[in-house]
Image (cartoon, rainbow, N blue to C red; front, side, top):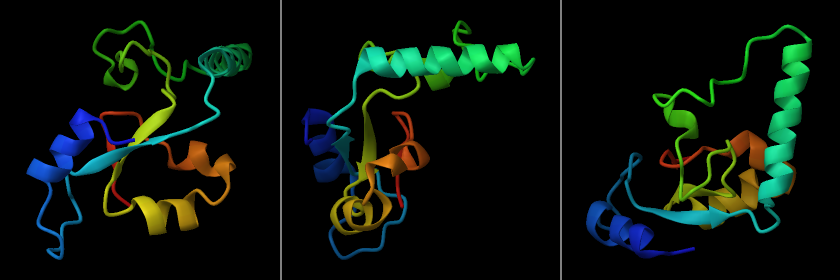
Length: 119
């Protein structure tokens, strides 16, 4: 998805095409089409409960206001918000062709916004 934030990042923050830029700020939003908030929230709660039963420490302290990992992203406060920022130079060939050829790889490749996946 190319929204206003994505367009701004590519037009004004990215290098000119052809210049090497492994740390580009230019990105697009890659959306997980079958993402379901309730399903993701339930899975996260179940995972947390299992860890607590085993005596493991929490994944993260979701109530900690200084925890940037789960700060609200467009109103969503769970780990997987259903989309991620992917460097525009990596979207088609690299991401679709290799890393996400199977949607089961979403969890492995996912980075919570505002982090940008750069390859």
